[in-house]
Image (cartoon, rainbow, N blue to C red; front, top):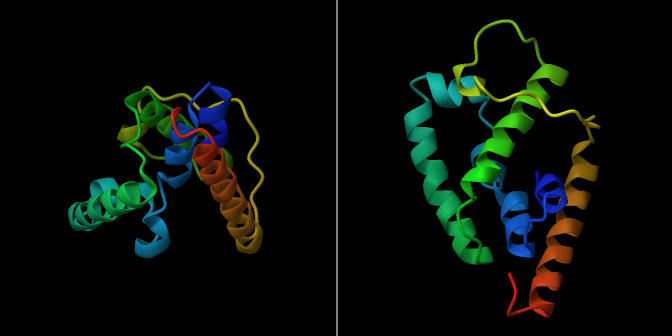
Length: 134
């Protein structure tokens, strides 16, 4: 997500917000989308997630993700679904969101953690060097 926002001209703060947009899942677990949005587990999970996302946004001084980027996140989810899951069954949350034309390389957890932390450090340093520009 962070790479896509950067490619679309997002500010450093936007790119950082995109990197952190699912950071709460590190604490709560990545609940599969259909469970999160269409089961009784969804409402309490989303409440906890909202509180955690607010704390992360405050800690890293990033605003809530822009609506345009939320649509991009849905398109990325549609891409992940088309590449990694069965497309049988309806996902109403993805109606109107076409998959992106890209390839996603799955990483082992160790590499994902390393890539995330490197990107986080880079963005934090970049933002610190340009305090008057997001």
